[in-house]
Each structure stands twice: as structure tokens, then as C-alpha cells.
Image (cartoon, rainbow, N blue to C red; front, side):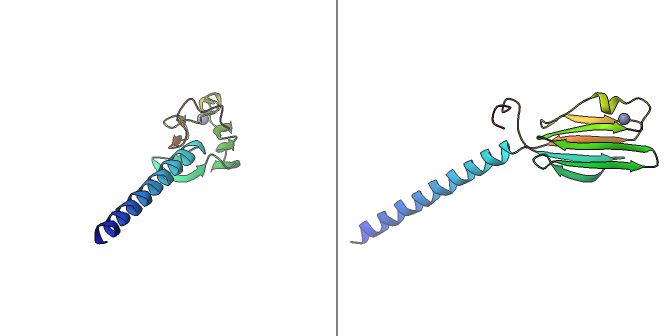
Amino acid sequence: MDWLKAHKNDTILIAVLLILGGALALFLLLTRQTGGTARVQVDGETVMELPLDKDAQVVLGEGGRTNTLVIRNGTAQVTEAGCPDQVCVRQGAVQYAGESIVCLPHRLVVSIEGGAGSGVDGIA
Ligand SMILES: [Zn+2]
């Protein structure tokens, strides 16, 4: 019954591949929905990466040249800043990959990477 044995192994292999494929798809789907990462860059250098699914508040910079970055409900926002133009504060919250908050006077960039695309607001 060699033929049957070989055939059975093929079936198991296919089943395993299907399960792995399903798990991978599920993993990608889940990781996509849990939101991305806020990458904080100062002067072009990444100084911090904060997951958007974990609430946090950090004060960036020093000596009056500060930006308060708040991560809340999957969004990133500069709530306070010592810069003269306050553009970064007025930009409000960002949450989708590709969005960013820029503070030119402080050479600060907060960019959202990975995570949810647009149109998944209802899930959270
Ligand atoms: Zn600013």
C-alpha cells in the first residue's frame, strides 16, 4: 500500500500548509488592526518608537524646547510644545500609516508606520 501512504502524506502536508497559511493571514490581519507605531525622529534620527495600542505620554526635548507627545486610543498627538509657531499642536492627532506631525522649530517628526489603514475606525 505504498501509493496510499504517499498520498496520505501529501494530504497531511497540504493540510499543514493550509493551517500555516491561515495562521499567517490571521496574524497579519490582527497585527494590522492593533495599530501601528509612532516613530519619533529628531534631526533625522529615530529616538523613540511607541506602539499606538499602548497609552503613553512622553516629553521630548529639553530646556523649554519641548514637545509633549501623547499616545491615546490608538492615536498620537502633540498636546503641548515650546515652539513659537505651535504648528505641531494644531496638527492634532494622527493614527494612520503615512501620517505625521512635524515641528519644524524643534526638528521633530512623529510619523505613523504600519498599523491600520483607513476605514477600520469601527473595529476599536
Ligand atoms: Zn512645534
